[in-house]
Amino acid sequence: MAATSRAIQYTIPSREDFTKLSDEQKTRVGEAFDLFDSNKDGLLSYEEFRFVLRALGFELPKPQTYELLIRHGQKPASWPLDQECPPVCRLFSLSTTQAIAGSLIRQRDPKEELRRAFRLFDIDGKGMITQDDLRRVSKQVGNNIPDADIIAMVEEFDASGKGGVDEDEFLRLMMSKK
Image 1 (tube, rainbow, N blue to C red):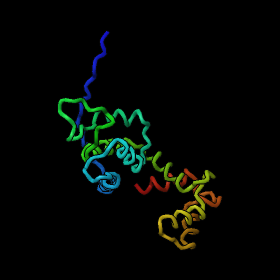
Image 2: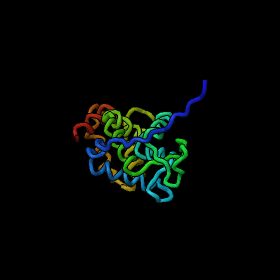
Image 3: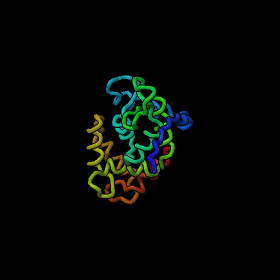
């Protein structure tokens, strides 16, 4: 039986999900694209695309990103028209990246995102955000919150008086702000 060559068909993903994102989310996608478009040609290589997704909080397995590459990656403009372009040489435009990122962002589970945020504070896995955690994060982001404010925050949201805000308290607090 002779081997058949499967032509790779490029499709343009829908931008509907991207148009429904907040302005802040759209800006984050654009900034990530600009940051990792290393040669500033308006196109991302497969590796650059994976970095953009990671910067946006997505750790997709390689087979899943490779499938996106097969479905949505474009041939480079310099590629000969009469030759098939292997997937790893294909590129992602800004609009394609926005469409894919928009879809991924809209599929996120808000509670799971908040749990991920909680773990950024609770790096040692003790199950609560303490005053020390808040001080550390405050310094990391360059916003040195006064100790009195940190103490007041923990006391206000530590419903059970255990010296920190546990994950359930954090989720309730953050979900009430939406």
